[in-house]
Amino acid sequence: MLTNPLRYGSRVAVASALALVILGGAASDAFAGRLGFGSISGDGDRYVLYRAGMVDQPGAPITERLIDERTGQARTLTPPPGCGLQTVRSAQLLWVCFGNPPPPPQITDLRSGLTRAVAGWDKVLAADAFSISPVDVGTSWLSVRQSGNHYNFLGYLDWHSGAWLWQPPDSATAQPNLDRAALMGPLCSPFRLPVNPYQADDNGPRFSPIAYVEPFRARSSKRGVYLNHCGKGPNRLLDKRCRTNCTYALGRRGRIAWTSGTGTRRTVRYFRPGHRKATLGTLTSFARSDRPVITFSRTRLLVSGGTPSSAYSFKLPIEPLTERTNWP
Image (tube, rainbow, N blue to C red; front, side, top):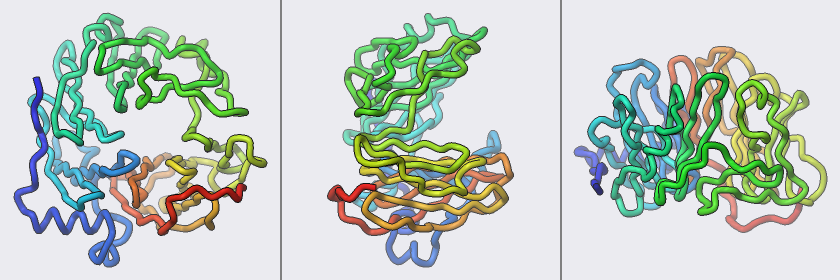
């Protein structure tokens, strides 16, 4: 069954102001950084999902809006009956639905506006896990966290055909990519996946995934956060302060953002090859153990986290969209 859960906000002026604040322009100049209590995320390109309210308090009223960076329009989201919003990724909205056993998740294609239940959900339920939780979505696949007695890892469902992989194939040179029809995306040389150190405990896959967007890889260690380029020069150390409680996110064209600091205030920094590092702003009201969630849209860096959760939006430096060759 195909439905359309998207509708324009009833107050056009409010929606337009919200889009200006998040996407840039006159409103954002006067309202930089923290948007308020809630969470915010991007699909990596065109769409931004803003959930306003006390999102970490069960039962609290939440307003969910979808902002289209290409048009500047903000739309209020109405969930399918019995479902709640999970995430936005690759122009797809993932809805998790509630019941016992859990009914199939539903996915909204933002290009067409149509919503459909995923195919093959009966195969996921047949795995007989103690707990099943849809996690993320792409244009081809849905990742599902499954946990049971002595196992806890991701399985993958082709939500078009219903093909189900309880675990990804063992490979040190490829990892799951939810936008690929064949699921496994190859890593460029010399990158290889590390061995999963918890395989004996959770019976999970042999290798652990890495932060990789071809041709770049990001990683952190006790020395700091690094950016690597396939076959071009040494690892680039970006920030020695991004160690304990370090959170980072890698986007297209080598865009990388991270937070430094371990106290109640965190600094948000950004780098893209061929450009200087930039400080975008400050996060506040963080407990020492809090780890912010960082995502990209086409022009913005979006951060959620803190106690209680707050949403932050930072405009990225204006950059040409062509690749630079001067690496590192």
